[in-house]
Amino acid sequence: MTRTETAPVLHADGLDCAVRHGARSRLVLHDVDLTVAAGEVVGLIGPNGSGKTTLLRTLSGALSPRRGQVLLHGRPLGRLTARQVAQKIALVVQEPPSELMLSVAETVLLGRTPHLGMFQRRSCRDESIAERALTAMGVRHLAQRETSRLSGGERQRVLIARALAQEATCLLLDEPTNHLDIGFQHQVLQLLRGLDTTTVVVLHDLNLAARYCDRLLLLHDGHVRASGPPAEVLGPDLLGDVYTVGVDPVTSPDGTNQLLFRAGTAPDEPRRP
Ligand SMILES: Nc1ncnc2c1ncn2[C@@H]1O[C@H](COP(=O)(O)OP(=O)(O)OP(=O)(O)O)[C@@H](O)[C@H]1O
Image (tube, rainbow, N blue to C red; front, side, top):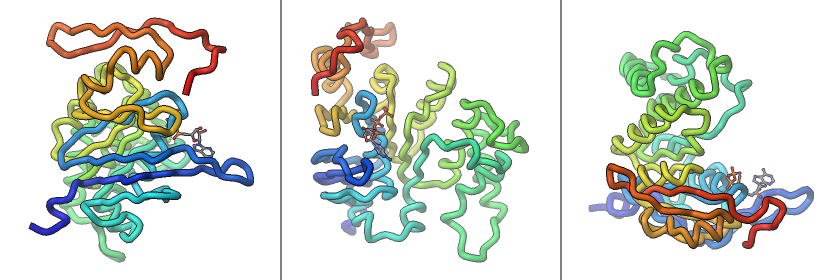
């Protein structure tokens, strides 16, 4: 077997990441390690501003770390072309509607772009892959609508469909359940779980994270506070400390560990790092 076949799909090693802050830059991720094996669903969790989106964008190659590196199938991300990365990684982030003036069908077909040669036209195969993605996300009936004019939840499903059409081996999703009703939240995460792809997903809902992720990485102020299986990471003491809430674990009728939350520290009291 070659090195790339045995390597994890994604491996982040000692990442420090900075964002611009006026004339200066500020470190928002500190020494973050993450390894994601083929087929795993890894959830990124943590309070607002803890660095989840920054980490996701760094894993996708959209941001370059100040220190450390990301390996994709054992190869440094920085040494791959944008096209090579796009054939392997699909990133789904919240996009402003103004950037989505195409029809739903065209938006989803854009997912095929990394697989086309410079002057190559889309084939019947591309069309049928896009159709399957539309169907999987329950948005086929919207195919002729303008994506920018859809509801937030409909648009979200179209963007996930575009990522499915990209047929990447690795899906990176930033809060994909945002805007979705409870039925679609479960449907989308179930679908992601059922795919062969490797998935890294930012989730705010810790109960969804517990139910659908193999492993979780808990960020707090840009530092990894815990990583491992949900049962290890979602301990009431740790969550109470990080989110400043009271946490009561309960077991749902199907045996899944779930959490109930109580108000904790008053909002004007600063959270402890
Ligand atoms: N483009 C930017 N310019 C300046 N600061 C930024 C930028 N992007 C992120 N930050 C800052 O970096 C820190 C981490 O932000 P990030 O968006 O990664 O957090 P997050 O955990 O995804 O937050 P949320 O849960 O609120 O979406 C925050 O303090 C944020 O204000």
